[in-house]
Structure formats: structure tokens, C-alpha cells
Amino acid sequence: MSMSQLVMALALVATLLQGTAAEDYTVGNATGWTNTQGATFYSNWATGKTFEVDDELLFNFATGVHDVAIVTKAAYDSCNATNPINRFQTGPATVRLNSTGDMYFICTVGSHCSQGQKLSINVVADDDTPPSPPPPNGTPPPTTGTTPPTTTNTTSP
Ligand SMILES: *[C@@H]1O[C@H](CO)[C@@H](O)[C@H](O)[C@H]1NC(C)=O
Ligand SMILES: *[C@@H]1O[C@H](CO)[C@@H](O)[C@H](O)[C@H]1NC(C)=O
Ligand SMILES: *[C@@H]1O[C@H](CO)[C@@H](O)[C@H](O)[C@H]1NC(C)=O
Ligand SMILES: *[C@@H]1O[C@H](CO)[C@@H](O)[C@H](O)[C@H]1NC(C)=O
Ligand SMILES: [Cu+2]
Image (cartoon, rainbow, N blue to C red; front, side, top):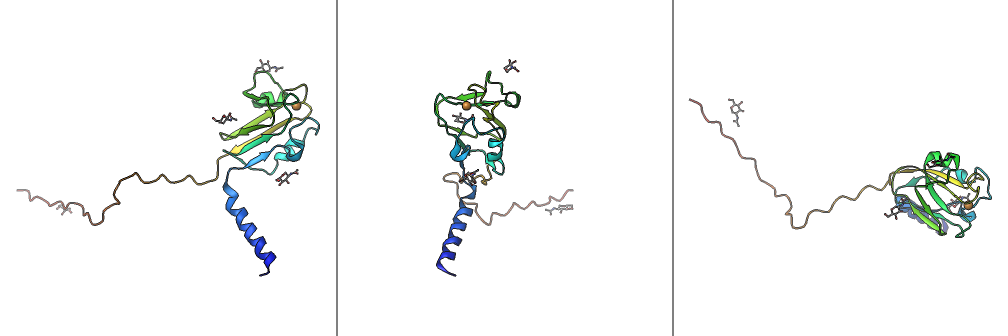
């Protein structure tokens, strides 16, 4: 095996090992969170990504120019900015994905949402196997050799 092959193999192993850690995503990558990209940009960005509980979405925008609102599906579909579930007005904004299910994000500034500044994702359970609880302190390990009491049949008269 050559040195470069070895380096690549090690890089692959490292990638596989970190595969289950919580991930941070920058929405729109270098483009950030904006209204200038058309209707399909953010759905294209989300395609192929698996979002898990504890992952974080970074919405990169300048405060006052855009915002991020977490909304219902109905509000997402109609770009209704009234009474969002939650709204982040300071950019950049980091949103932690706390629960499984569909999540909907829009910008409530002007008509940015209907210009395509909206994102819907599905959040699935974290694929990390939950850590097994540590044994309670001071509990002695199970002792061996405790035989069940032998029940002797009483001879009935
Ligand atoms: C966005 O960044 C991720 C991670 O760096 C990369 O895998 C992906 O190809 C990028 N997507 C676009 C559309 O540039
Ligand atoms: C937008 O949502 C609000 C609150 O849910 C609702 O009262 C209102 O009727 C909606 N507006 C439209 C145009 O659907
Ligand atoms: C997730 O939980 C954190 C801590 O409780 C909270 O600050 C954050 O707003 C929650 N994220 C969402 C999307 O509700
Ligand atoms: C007790 O007696 C019953 C009936 O004679 C028998 O089936 C059973 O195996 C006996 N149990 C033991 C522990 O000897
Ligand atoms: Cu906007």
C-alpha cells in the first residue's frame, strides 16, 4: 500500500467513525439564507441530507435583512407569517433540532417566503445507540453459586 493510499484509508475510517455524531448544517451553504435564489434552491439544498435530533441548522443572514420563523405546514404552504411557532430575528441564527417530525422554516420579511426563502425538512431520530446506564454505585456484582432453595415435598398423610 502506498503512502497516499494509506492516508486515504485513514481518512475514510475517520469519516465512518464520526458518521453518527450530531451535525451542523449551514442552510444554503455559502449562499446562506436569502430570497434571491428562486423557488427550489432550499429544497434542492435539503435533498439527500438526513437531519437528526440534536443536529443544528445555521441560518446565515444579516440582522434586519431577513429572519427565520418556525411555522406550521399550513403557514409554510401559504407563506403566512402571522403567529409563527418561533422566530429568530438576529442573524446568523442557530436552530437545534429537538424533536422528530417535519419542520418548516420561512423568512417573514416582505414577500421573501413566496420568492422561495423557505425550507422544509424531516427530522428523524438520532442514530446513535443510546448509552447504556452506568451500574449503580456500590452495587456488588451478582454473586455466583446462590442455588435456589430446594423445596422438599412434605409427605402428606
Ligand atoms: C454544501 O456543503 C456540503 C458540505 O460541505 C457539501 O457536501 C455539499 O455538496 C454542498 N452543496 C452545495 C449545493 O454546494
Ligand atoms: C394566517 O395565520 C393566522 C394565524 O394562524 C390566521 O388567523 C390567518 O387567518 C391566516 N391568514 C391567511 C391569509 O390565511
Ligand atoms: C431546542 O431546545 C433549546 C433548549 O431548550 C431551545 O433553546 C431551542 O429553542 C429549541 N429549538 C427549537 C427548534 O424549538
Ligand atoms: C413434588 O411432588 C410432585 C408430585 O409428586 C412432583 O411432581 C414434584 O416434582 C415434586 N417437587 C419436588 C421439588 O420434588
Ligand atoms: Cu428574507
